[in-house]
Length: 112
Figure 1 (cartoon, helix red, strand yellow):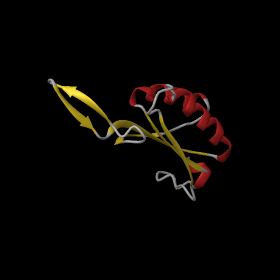
Figure 2 (cartoon, helix red, strand yellow):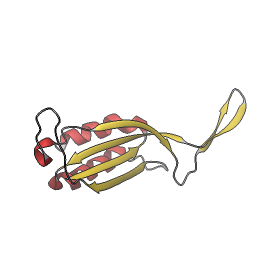
Figure 3 (spheres, helix red, strand yellow):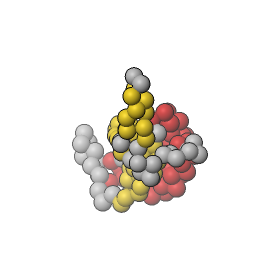
Figure 4 (spheres, helix red, strand yellow):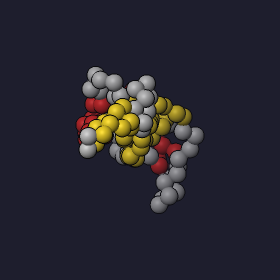
């Protein structure tokens, strides 16, 4: 099992969710986050005054999938989240040692 974490632009969330559903992902967790990468934030104008926005709003998606779904999951996220401009985001993959479904006590692959 793998944990796939993706940080994407907020307006791409629905596209990514639909794309993940089409490849067989049955559930995901979404968090609103802020951060910066190479762009180091940006400047905005509010009521005539310019100010720096050091942290850019993003959405973090977390999905735990079986090993055979890792590549389709990566492809689905990348294709649906890509705009071609700076700040499209990142995808991270981590090993998951164990999982437990609280309601039934099922473990590992049966729990996801």
